[in-house]
Length: 427
Ligand code: SDX
Image 1 (spheres, protein in one colour):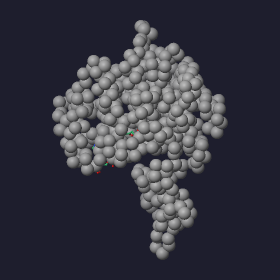
Image 2 (tube, rainbow, N blue to C red; image 1 turned 180 degrees about the vertical axis):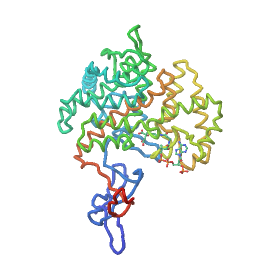
Image 3 (tube, rainbow, N blue to C red; image 1 turned 90 degrees about the vertical axis):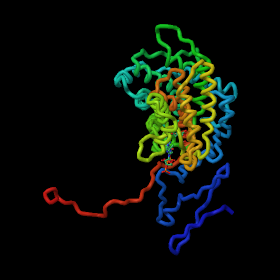
Image 4 (cartoon, helix red, strand yellow; image 1 turned 60 degrees about the horizontal axis):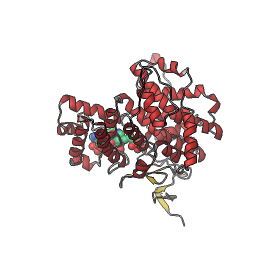
């Protein structure tokens, strides 16, 4: 007999089914609540509300567990590659060697953008934020590729997915090159995915460019760590936009915009700006932490806190270790890393943060590595989007496979009661 929950309202009792996830998570199914009781639920920010059942990523916020399709993030970080993880998230299983090679080859030959795309970027101001440029460019893909927009046509979906994964590094690098007034580079199909991205970002037509394997490995790791995170704000945005049967490019463009916010992916840029402010102003870590605790002070400890992780964010632990490894291999001393470590040590012993379960999240250390390899602050969130792309796509695919109804939340109306129109002369 399936377990149920009882809801008593006045003299009526409603029985609601309880469903259980594969990891033992339980939920009250309220999909028939309004029809049966006339009642809806209210949960601003959806802290207690599941939007779907999903088999892609599992997070245990209390235990600091993160798994993609059942594989612990620590093992994928150590053994996998970003393209393999992208295939895993979207297809559901680790690819065989031949499947992965076939996927790599397809991506490799879709990396170029239509030549007219250059005018899309050159029409933007030089100081356009890369996230604005990326969301505009991804949205514009729908105009260049009208032949693959039907979310119900498996062949068109496959073509769109491969085009997006392949072209995102080109789009992100065009956004960067435009912002520094350098010519766009063409993809080099002799390089692998991350090497090609670094070539697109940092090579110029004037001289040969050799990818540093330490840098390539670090970026591949960061992309793996950012690849998915279940129903976060931007992924939920992709699912909601996708539920209207808008095309994949439109849904991903919306996801990029949601990720841009400083409460979400935009935090990685905020963190490095925070560290640079502390360094520049000569503020001590303790002074800054006190400011971050002060409600009357707008300072926040960016990169700290998380809706789900009420313990450590496993990604932050991996990135922190990678910071030390990469900087040592590159022979870079980073004052910013020293400041970040000091802030973490202070905050983790401070009651304000401890009582609120605020720990470093994925954004706290990532910018230190991006800075060490020469990525400008404004590109950090675009790097996050590059990593999150396969996760967004996986959720879009899953939502369509579940044939989910269009997302349309209800509300509790608190406005004026009915009233008659009054002509302007009488107001
Ligand atoms: C990402 O959802 C995901 O999975 C996201 C993500 C992913 O991979 O997709 O993990 C990526 O977005 C990571 C989060 C990046 N954002 C930041 O680092 C910005 C700083 N953090 C906060 O803005 C905040 O912690 C959130 C937005 C991340 C979470 O917000 P919640 O869950 O709504 O928590 P809250 O804002 O209600 O905070 C609870 C308390 C509040 O204090 P009180 O009202 O109890 O007095 O903690 C305080 C907040 O003021 N607080 C902070 C703080 N974060 C929360 N105080 C100081 N500094 C902070 N960073």
